[in-house]
Amino acid sequence: MEVKTVTGWSGSLRAGVREASPGGADRPPLLIFNGLGASLELLEPLAAALPDRTLMVIDAPGVGTTPPLFPYRFWTLAWLTRQLIRESGWGDGPVDVLGVSWGGCLAQQFAVQFPRQCRRLILAATSPGTLMVPGRPTALLNMLQMAFHPGEVSATRWLAPVFGRSPDAGTAAVIRHGLRAGKSDFLSQTWQLLALWGWTSLPWLGRICQPTLILAGEDDPIVPPANARLLAALIPQARLRLFPDGHGFLLTRAGQAAAEVEAFLAAPEGVPEVR
Image (cartoon, rainbow, N blue to C red; front, side, top):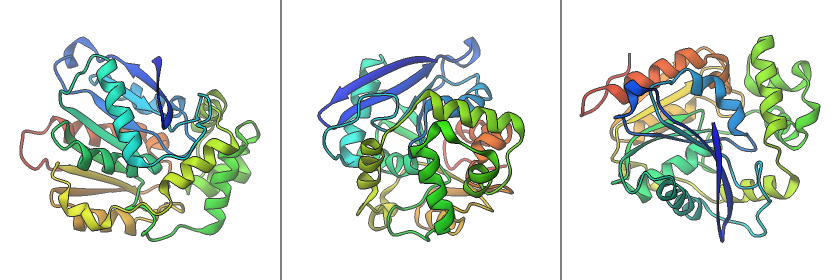
């Protein structure tokens, strides 16, 4: 991926851009908002499984960039993302949006803030924000430890409790590489958590007008699947797909997840059906 950054008063965003194969050049780009403390390198397996889509993977402020000096909100990040899209030459044309975990909240904000630019929406392992069904406290603590100490990831101590299932050796290696490649620090992590604090989409989920695919893990200790069912019930054009896995199913089941995403995005206009 070609790495780009854009800076605004709410901080700097780091993004990886990967052009589509020749056969997919006429399809709308796919914008991916990453999770809390995660780096774009973590999503390389998913990106590789979507060769026919031009991708832009956006990390949270402070991941692989200078930490923001001040707190920010999701609506300011949505504006900064639109600036990045324009600077990348996409203009105000339609994009599809995928949000992962923390990034799923930002994806909901982008979809309702710029409804004409967001064509379709995919929400993976995410929730309506602070008003959510909470995860297991031990898993949440392990996730924060893993994000704050990327060089000390232990597959036996942290990965299984966070992701809900024990990842294989290949997936564990990708996770270690991604955490080290796009490091975050205490201040950046604090601002990321504060952006989520007090934010909820529950009052306006019914205003999300885009066809929406909701993906979740049945054994997710961070964001229990009850949150996915809640999103599916309140978003008008939503479809739900559950994976027999944990919070990291986009990594452990990258091929299957990519197939669901591609089928949803390639479906005719109207309400896309999920296989």
